[in-house]
Length: 296
Image (tube, rainbow, N blue to C red):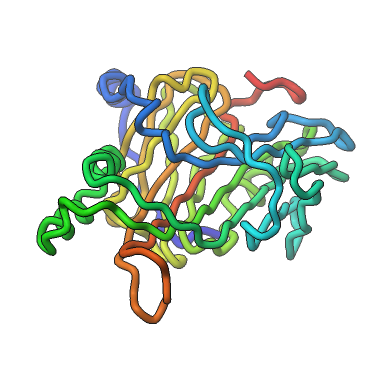
């Protein structure tokens, strides 16, 4: 379960409407640049039936323009599924070198959480493009440290990791089962997005809250972006508070993905290639109580 602390909500309906109108102004037509490096798990359905085969694609880029990565066990350390009530995960199987990267058949109804964790990969980015990336991802502290160290004219050299989650609701189950287990599960990723709002009970004009955790502790001041996968040209942005929490007011139900990035200086004892370690987190899920088998 998440370690983020609860905060009481005292806003009225008129307050929420006002915030929703303000939030609409924050939707930016910048998704192609903001999501150029994003990575997420894309299931063929967020609402499959028991026994239905789920294909799990690993996508990098932007929901409208992405590359699909083939399965390569050399590139990940975890690719697994947490079934409802399960004390441990089971591996997601697939054909090496093929797409989709994972195949899965659920044996029981309920919320199934898929998890992917990569190992380190290295990238070097030309200085101007790297500065633009840092600005777009809200990594002002990294920009400031590069300037302080006299590195602004140097290329960005990162060793990065991916931490992806996707939530799939198999068939129908008791509502209290979804409240009790599944959507808010913390699986111990080094950087992890955790849902605090039950996505299946969510309704328009209600806030959606996510928490960002670094090594199990709330991470303050990081930008989270929320993308509606069926309208990915719009991006909603928010920064985490002292409890690691970010709040959004999506206008309607449908499939979404949340993304966050944290950069930290690479330490000599890590023996990493590059100057920075980049931690990338994503979470794909569906909002709203749609009928099973439908992806809005």
